[in-house]
Amino acid sequence: MEPTPHPEIGIDTLFDAVVQPRRKLSVENKRIDGAISKALGPLTNRLQGRFDVRAYRGARERVLRAAKSDSGMVVVEGVNLAGVTARKDADALVSRLLRIREGSEGLTPTFVLGYLASPGGLNGEAHMKEWMKDQVSRDVYDLNTEQEQFRARTHSLLDEAGITLRFL
Image 1 (tube, helix red, strand yellow):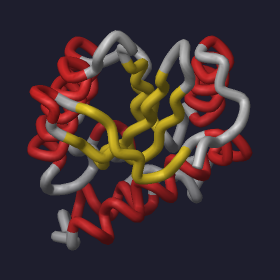
Image 2 (spheres, rainbow, N blue to C red):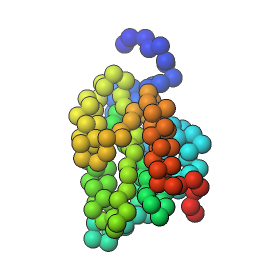
Image 3 (tube, helix red, strand yellow):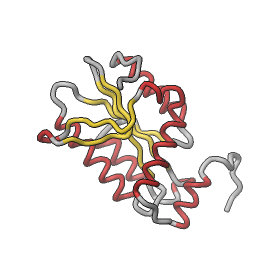
């Protein structure tokens, strides 16, 4: 292994890519939520966690974080692309977000996606990232290396939608 100039970045995702541990879904969801919250910083307070939204044919889906106003809705989601179930998880996320897009009535949601990547793409996740970009949103960011861009884009979308405070 080559030394990295930033050893704090990617240790967990390196472990995921090399060891491929199986984790409970609840543990994985908390991990993604923590990475999203860390990347969003103070913006986290402008988004409601575990937000229920309307999906295809009236079904309800829960998203990681979202905020809604009369003029727009911003949905922030994430996925671990370094783990053993990365492809399945990315496909499930894309499918769920497409169902949400189809079920929105007049207020099309804007999606911002964050992902945990293996260092140097060790897990071969590049095609999954591109799939998410092609199918759901061009706003897809590595939560280890693109936190500033992720935060700035989310801030911009919240402002465009007129969302200043978290709705409870």
